[in-house]
Structure formats: structure tokens, C-alpha cells
Length: 115
Length: 112
Image (tube, rainbow over all chains, first blue to last red; front, side, top):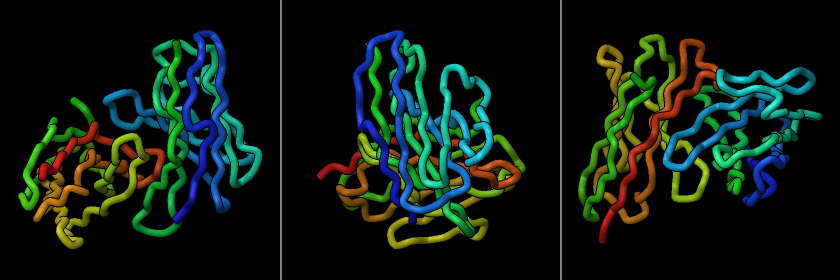
């Protein structure tokens, strides 16, 4: 299994500002995933972060709004830029296991409230 | 139509009851199927994979019907600690983690 930590665990931010969320994994992984879980909703994939290349964004998410860094095989950051109240959500970092069946491991999440 | 649809819930059941959750998926080429459990204010964690032949893990039984594109989870002898939201998760045709689709979840509360 993978142990994933995220910082910060929660934050309250003003609209128009940006927040960078850090994700650290206890082992080297090829892909790291960033999800969003809005209140009362299920998880939606924002982007996939690969080390040494640009992140791959899912439909509805763009790099200018959610820039991602992946400097090495154990670490990634997601920035939520120019925040609005609609960005209030839980942001989760995730990796998957090697082998079959694939299990998805999640970090504890960052609970973001934008006022 | 949502790609993965689950029973709306919430389910409130007494301890010891048997409860079943259903899930349907729209992509007939989906490869892998899972049930995840998410406790309140916690991250989702894998409960069990779902295999075509059906599989059991203690009090939990998962079944898959590819023809009907339907997945179920049965919990027998419910415990208070089973209270959580249960997420149905389906992968796309490639089985890639990028193609994981999560259902909106079914909330279960087991009452003493």
C-alpha cells in the first residue's frame, strides 16, 4: 500500500487568492492524480501528473486555473488559482497500486473553503 | 444519464440487518469494478473489487452482471462500524486509472 500525506489539511481563503496543495507519497510512483470532491458529490478527476512532462487535464479543467508541478517521483503540488466560492471543495491526491487489480490510494484530502 | 448511478440512499438500518446497494454503469466496455468506502470527512478506501463470478469477503458480497451493466454490494449482519458512504467505481475500456468513474455514493447508517 502507499501512504500519502497532504498539506494543508484545510484552509479558508479569500476569493481572488491562490492556494498550493502539497502531496507527498512514501514510495516512487509514475503517475499521481488530483481529484476534487465537492460537497455532497463524488470524486472528479482534475488531472494526472507525470514526472518530467506536462500534466494531463480532464475536460472542464485547465492549467491556468489548476497548475500542477511534479518535480520528482514522490511529490506533486496542485495550485487552485484566482479562487472563487465555487472552488470550495475537498482536493485529494491519489496514486494507484502496481499489479492487478489496481487499487487507488488517496491522501487525506485538503478541505478548502473560499469566502 | 450519469456514467455510474447508485441508489440515492440514505439507508438507515438496525444492527444485524442485511442491506444491499445497487449500481449501474453506462459504458459496456468497462473493465474493472470496485466498491470503495468513505467514512465521514475521510478519504475513500478500497472495500473490495468486483469479479464477474461474484466474490465474498466476510460479511460483504459483491456481484457483477455485465449483461445488465449492474453491480451490487450486500452487507450481512450490519455493524455500527459499517456506517459510511459506499462508492461504486468503474474503470473504462483500458482499465486506466485515468478512466476511473466514481458514483455519487450511497450513505449507510447502522443504528443501535
